[in-house]
Amino acid sequence: LKDIQFIRSICYDKREYARFDSNLGRYVGYTEFGVKNAERWNKDTSQIAVMKAQREAYCLHNIDIW
Image 1: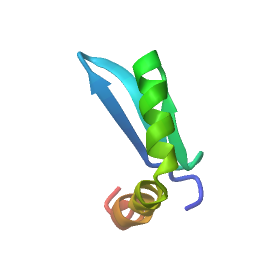
Image 2: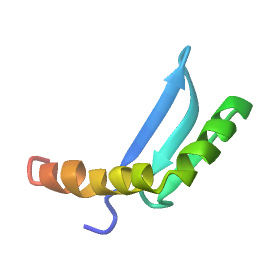
Image 3: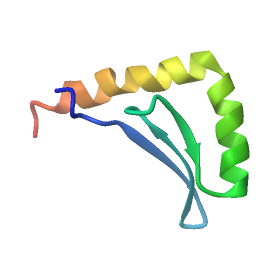
């Protein structure tokens, strides 16, 4: 179960500008706007903890369905 990955992509106008990756444990920005937001989101430890918990809450819960 360690190979399960939770990814939350954040898009605007059909373009991904930021993403949370549970393997990295942080947000990654892909545009100038996304990098600025990712830096801000990564400073919020409570937000990071919530997103890390999503892997267990969402992915591991639904793995038996697949």
